[in-house]
Image (tube, rainbow, N blue to C red):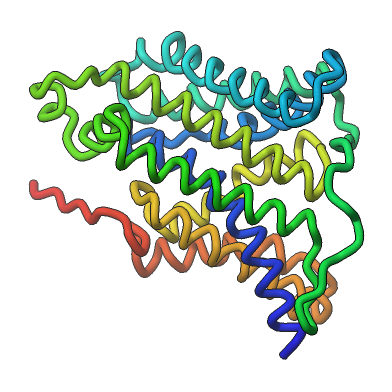
Length: 295
C-alpha cells in the first residue's frame, strides 16, 4: 500500500506539470480550433531560454525565468501574426501543417545553439527528500506541484476576472457573436498564442528542474500531454487539469508495477494506450463539447 501511495503522490506532482503543458493546447484550440503541434518545442525553447539568460546575463535564476517567459509571450505573438493570421479562412489542415513546420524550425534552432546534449539548471532546492509518514517526497517534485498549482490558479483567475480573458472565452464559444459585440477576434487569437507559449515555457522550466534539459526529451513532453488533452477534452480547461493528473498517475503506476514485469517501456506506452481507448469510447473527452453536424 505504501508503494502504491508513493507512486500516486509522485504521479500527482508530474500530472500537474502535464496539466500545465496541456493548458497551452486547450487555450489555442478553444480560440482557433487549431492543434498546435509545435507546443513541445515552445516548451523546450522556454527552458533553454531561461538557461541562456542565466548564463549570459548572470541574473538570478528567477529573473532569467521571468525573462524567458516574456520572450515566449513575444514569440507566440509573432508566430500568430506572421504565420497564422494570413491563413485565416484556409483549411484547418494547412494551419496544422504550418505548426508541424514551425516545430521543425524550433527544433533546429535549439539543436544549432545547444546540440543534443544534456544540461541542468542551477540547484535551487535541497536534494534531501522530505518525509510525510511512510511517504518520501522530493523537494523538486513538491516545488513543481506548487508552481503548477499557482500558475493554473493565475490562468483560471485571468479567464474569469479580466476583460481579455472573458473575450477569449466569448471567442471560443462563438467567434461571429463575439465579433458582433465588438470583440477583436485577431487580438484574442494573438493573445491565445502568446499565453500558450508562456504556459509551455513555464512547463518547460518545471520539467527541466526535475529531469534536466535535453531538447528531444523536453519536446516529447508536448507529445506526451496530448493524451491528457484528449482525455479531458480539447476545449476544456478543467479537463486539461483532470487529464494531466490522470495521465501522470497512470504513467507512474505503469512504471512502478508493469515495467519491472515486462522489462521497461510500459510507462511510455500507457498514455498513448489511454489515448486510443478514449478516442474509441468518448472521442470528445470527459469534458469536451460534443458537436453534432447534420447533413
